[in-house]
Image (cartoon, rainbow, N blue to C red; front, side, top):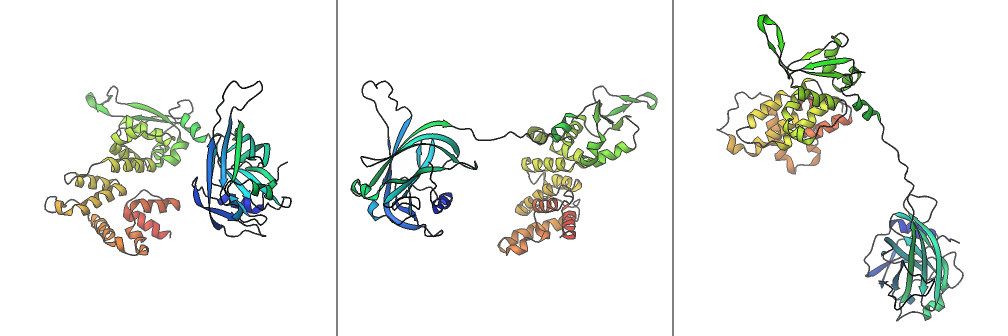
Amino acid sequence: MKTPIPPSAAAYSQSYKTLPAFFQLSVIFADLGGPKQPKMMSFHHNIKHITAVSVGTPPNGYSYEGWKTTEVHFHGFAGLPSACGEIVVSPEFTCCGHQWRLELCPGGDDKSPREMIAVYLKLCSSGKIFVEYSLVVEDTAYYDWEALFSYGEDYGYYDYDGTPDFAKRSKIMNALVKGTLIIEVRMKLDKEIEPFTPFIPENPLCKHILKRFMEEETADVLFEVGSESEGCRGARKRIKGTLATFHAHSFVLRDCAPTLAELCKSATTMSPIRISDVKPDMFRHMLYYVYGGKISDEVLESNARDLIDVADKYSVVNLKLEAEACYARSVKLTVGNMLDILLYADSKNCALLKELVIDFMVENWEGIIGKVSFQDVPGSITTDLLTAMGRGEGKDKESSKRTDCNVMRVGTLRKKLHEKGLDIDGSREAMIALLKENL
């Protein structure tokens, strides 16, 4: 019959930290009406593993297969605290593929008969297993049992098993080897029990919406994307292979691509909406993203600026930010291309990309002055330059000053706005103003 260990042992076992297999300090816990601070004692524990080797032919019915033996040595046993409820915890050891430890009460616990010592085997690694095990002190004490151990969140089962009346203390004292108590832990794994892990599929809404991508049967919007050329007498003539048709659903566009949804309001039912200034493949990538699809890193990296353009044009904010981040990671800034990238970032309100270029300019100012003309650069760039310079000068200033909205990084501004449910697509100045309005 299973006998629980003292409450102090159960509480302590949750916070016990793994110790080396051979160590000078062990932890003692006293159960004197409530939890107390652990005491440190100076003695050794030594753990020894034993394997069996057969000599000759085993007799019929003999089976030792699967049995593993671990010796746990409690050095200086006579000097261990012997008051009822005090616990000596061994280091963890590996047996049958799991971590274990012994918890010894040299003076017994509150369930122990008088003068009896208590010993408990505790599972310390995740799992639910059924084992046969024995606790043995040679020629002195023997405890044999079968038990189900469960460690984790499987309520209703214990992670320990053992006995409060392992042996009389007087007998154990006579069995010490130079003052050391040696307990053999013999164990055989009966079976691993699969944990109760119900399968719960994720919410299927996103997958269902993605399945509607390019579905002609249920679509209520039709786009024709590509270029056309002028034919004779002003007639419009399609160039073969450059015009692509895309079916879509207005309810999807309404929230995910609002600017694109606005185009649909003026169109009659299923009459084609012509888009001539976007590449068909870029439009397809954008529309696929709007329906919940993921664009591969390879496509993002090779088409970053085109995707920024189409996402900015039709207000697909997340795609724009994703493409911008990819472009910022992959672009190699030089004195020769920095101005072009800066002007591009400013025109598309790509604040992160703009910040990257500004940082480059501050770090490399000696190689830029006198070599690059800033005649066409907007005046608003001056504020960004001063902010970057001030941020660098303020590295050693107190943190409260660095939390000022005016010097926050773009990534921080966007995160704070997103947490408040506010728009994160805009220039640095626009984001700072919006955040200040909603502090």
